[in-house]
Amino acid sequence: MSTDYSAAADPRDLLGYLLKHATLRLTALTDAALEHLGIDSKDFGALRVLAHGEPASQLQVAQKLGVDRTTMVALLDELERKGIVVRRPDPADRRRNIVALTDQGRRTFDAAQAAYQDAENAFLVPVRPGAADQLRRTLQDLLER
Image (tube, rainbow, N blue to C red; front, side, top):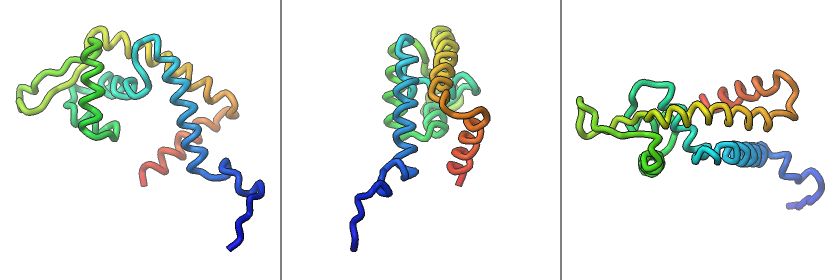
């Protein structure tokens, strides 16, 4: 077995490496853009789900985001402590909590949406026009499998 340490072994040739490091860079940019609002990109994901849907249970939000229930509870605990979301028992099923944005949460989401978009646009500056949409569609296709 031969071990070739040439330029062909550059980790930037590996899709996993590229996806991971692109994600890390985008997360750093979006977290910095959202910091003045007291949230980060994980928080923004939850706010986005809540802002664009009917009242949702904690479990529904977690499923939509692809996170486990324990992680979701911790995230919502923090957002509730900040006055951004409120949890109330579901009148139809008292074992279930409904999560909703507060008025402050709606304002935070509106400001966060603009800040997130600015950070995403800055991340995509090196990409030629149209390529960002193609990248988004390709990644969506890969995740649907």
